[in-house]
Amino acid sequence: MAAAATPIELLAAHGADGFPHLLAARERTEAELAELRSRLAGLERDEDVAVVLFGSWGRRELTEHSDDDWLLLVDGPRREHTAPGLDALRERLGGGAREPGEAGIFGGTAFGDDLVDHIGLDEDDNRNLTQRMLLMLESVPILGEDAYRSCWTRVLDRYLAEEREARRPPRFFLNDVIRYWRTIAVDFAGKQRDSDEKWGLRNAKLRTSRKVLFAGGLVPIVRCHSLPREQVRPFLIDQLSRPATDRLADAFLATGLQDAGVRCLSAYDRWLGLLGDAEVRAELASLDRRSARRSETFVDVRRLAADLQNGLLALLFETQLAPAVREYAIF
Image 1 (cartoon, one colour):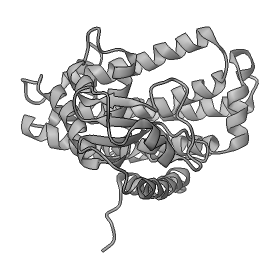
Image 2: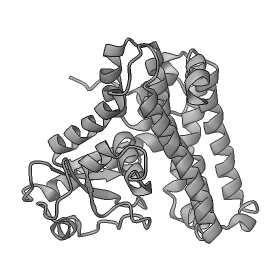
Image 3: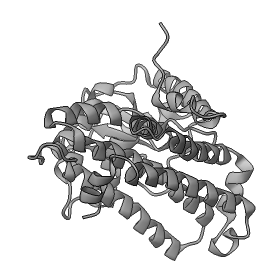
């Protein structure tokens, strides 16, 4: 029996060109996930330990140049020793694995109790917030799926435990997703102040991939405004288990905004195609603020980013989602 079409495939049927780069990246991601899972098979593992990939892996948007942003996730309190240990994991992930990004968020251990118990206040530092948000919004396990799912669900249930009113978005979760998006934007400005290195590439990602990360969390949460309380949890589990572009495609289809959805995700599809081009990526990485506007490539990326944003704004403010967005996402 053929697998049911995904929302991105259903939306693609409404356009002339489909989403070739997105769909090719999904195929590539699934193939490489299978290879990594095979590589880790048989590795000694504690029952509460998972190995999780983030970023383009979690969005199912892998390109040849993507980082391998991974964490060893422990579904429990902090402890000194785990199986596998970091050294054993790095060794098993070797043989062509790309290094995690340079921010220091990945390539180490995260503890579920910190992610669940330290939401807000002083102990919820940038690292903890980032690891929790990316766990919820763009992650995929390659070892220890039960431990991963348990930790993921614990975080979701911590957010939902604060909800007392029916038929409104879960505000605790919504506020944290918005806080994370604003943190990304503020941190971008902080990095820009310190260095212009890779400014063009970081700016392009902020306008595109990071925006899809945010919208992929914001939109499903806002859609909960029409649901009775008992349906919110299963709805969010279903939605957030999908790649972010599927969540957005599903919302465009559900609100009858197919044409805007095609324009929006076609722009993102073309961005993904550019990102997978080594020469384009190198050019963007070489640009600083002064040189970027003289780059035809950067100008093209900004145009695609504007098309992406216009589609997302239409979804949020020109559909039945608009009243909930105005009431809950601003104040």
